[in-house]
Image (cartoon, rainbow, N blue to C red; front, side, top):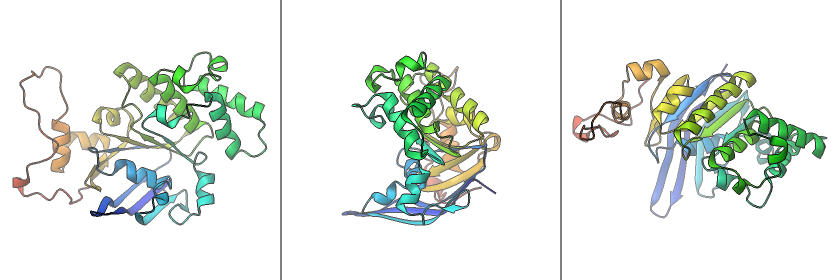
Length: 288
């Protein structure tokens, strides 16, 4: 039985210009200990679908949400706000895109980690929560964690702030980790370190992971399965090896052909991810 199962998820937003179908019938499943990579261009619905899994889009007054999201047998769409608050940060956690804006600039890193522990573990003293925070900072590779725990977010580099976000997401040993573009603003060396860290912690904690990215190199490194999103829909879903060896949907062909390759000259043409409309292929038609 999958740990997370999403069926026919639709998230539509009413606006003055009409209805925006941000997510329009998305289905996928993730088993415990496995990683799903969701790829696609900006605006394809990747982040909105995962924010809905977290229960965060329900607070938008103009959102219409339907379908089914089940985490370990519990219906998340039908869950109360109180139940979702209990689950968020405990059974399900998310690494957000920009760690600098996700961490509160006025509070020390340690205080924010301690709060995350005490919010979900009743009876935990501040000293015990602080010890757990120091342990997690060390686990994600921050040097001298007992000293750095009292630093403010702006005193960390971009890579170190991302490690703090990973520590905060994992501090309560979640069953599911959603990583939304966790390496976007990082240089390639730090990116490789973050991806290695996520893989190591996944193996140690037996987590399920949903990795949201536009970078096919990232999903090639981390994911077991890949879902390609376009215009709010999953147009292709397959195991990683099959996706790279024999993609079936024209949008996936375009994504793969747009990857720069060693040895190609500056004048070499690279394909746009969007196939030509004249080919007469329905981009919204799902392929499995």
